[in-house]
Length: 502
Image (cartoon, rainbow, N blue to C red):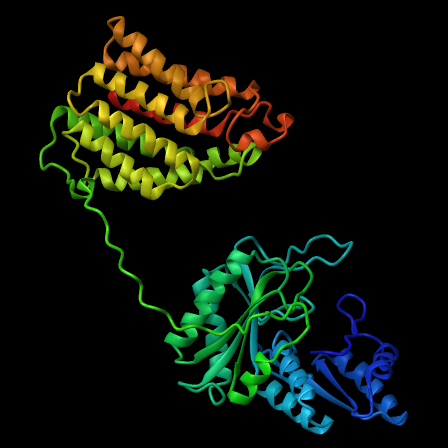
């Protein structure tokens, strides 16, 4: 793509001396093309180097890239050059490799630069080496029209969703370049990481940009390049570039290059394929429905489920905070997803007058709403509990079901009480419930004993070494004085059930 690149100090143009040294190093008889981002300092320094190189007998041409269309006023300085230069450079480099003359390559590059348009959006400003982080943007703000050097953009706005940010950018590009990007035209798109945007977010933005350009503006995107091509240190954000293409430009974009960061595949956009309909086995649980009238047991079961779900939702952030210290930080989020789904299904389709069928339905809800190990373990527990309640739904059956669920969790999960997991709250809770019930206590008293035992068990995990789960990978010192989030969650929902049935 390029034979040489010349850089200056951070956010400063290189000196004409450095540019001239690069020209002397790479310019052969065929000459040398300079592709320059349109900033005043760069134009001056590169322009001076061009004149000196010509005086030495070198054939030199210079093309300015000014693709930023976020600012309406251009003035003397003209538009800034940003990520569109990637496409200009690739096409010009391929044209040179074909053997075109310097004048012809410069014309190809110039035509490409004139038709390429870009808009950048930053959600966090970059930090200069040795400087304090910028406070220009608030936590809920973003800046539209960011330049290469983190200079203020066209506007500062409240943070928006990825879909809305993409719409804003593409609408701006389309409004500015309607003549070059008419409905039905083919285009290449670059979704460029400005520095530190997570890869997952980049592809969320890329999918949204592709769909919006094609569905709203009827621009057929045939090449999509997603990656970290043109950065501004550690800035968080992205830019979107669009370039109309014909067969000639496509051939040059697709031509091989040794440039390490150019995508190795051709980044061809494949049309959406129809989704394959997969036959599903009959599942009687999906046919369940909420009874029109609830029995006394049904009312209690509904109250217990809804109270437990509400408690988990209330403490979700707290559980995530604890999990960030000792695990992967998503315990509360995962349990909250299950709680929301249980709350919704409880009001619509749980057969609450039948405890066994309800526990099976809860297991199904947990299975489709909660990922990770906690989702699987809770599903195993509820399936075992449901199996014990099929024949009879007495207190003894609930005890046997809870014990069976506990055994199943240990069997499939591999953990045991004392390993600093949810079992350290669940096991003593079940033991206390059974002991209190068998000694003549009523269900409410037994539940209160279970909730108290679960809370004590969760508290004890603060001094335990982790023998299983994500915490087992964490240094022991980091675990000290923080209760296991999974065990704490058990204590939370058990306490909520005890309060609901009191």
